[in-house]
Amino acid sequence: MRYVARNRKARYEYEIKDTFEAGIALMGSEVKSIRGGKVNLSDAYAVVEHGEVILKNLHITPYKMASEQLDPIRPRRLLLHRREIRKLFVATEQKGLTLIPLAIYIKGRLVKIELAVAFGRKKYDKRQAIAKAEADRRIKRATSRDY
Image 1 (cartoon, helix red, strand yellow):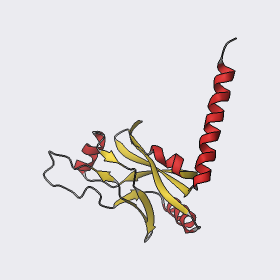
Image 2: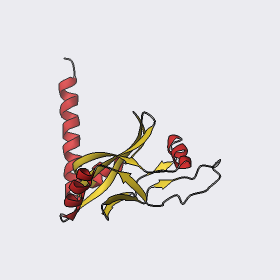
Image 3: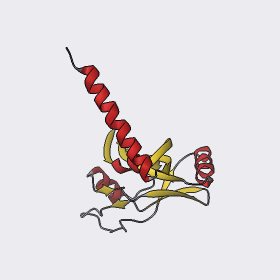
């Protein structure tokens, strides 16, 4: 498994409830661009529409050698089982929960995406998360020293 892109800001901006692994319906030239690391998922999100999960605002830079140039931010269908789609639909119906991509990676010869059910953090929650992470680092540093 090789990570191509990660949404580092997602774990800071959102509180992650659950994660899912999904395939992405792509064209051949898009796969080549992803393998080259030409993908940006910082503004991407997913929605459940008509029994399908659609990924929006995922920017895949067009492959230069492709004969057909595709729209870089076109909506892309995520490949999930029906029961997973139902779980995601129920989860997103709750107030404040959203679907955000955490990472895109290559597993074997397939392109996969890690999708999270999350809710947005408030400013004070972000400060508390930073303070907690700092305290954990200090504790770990203090306990790992050899005296």
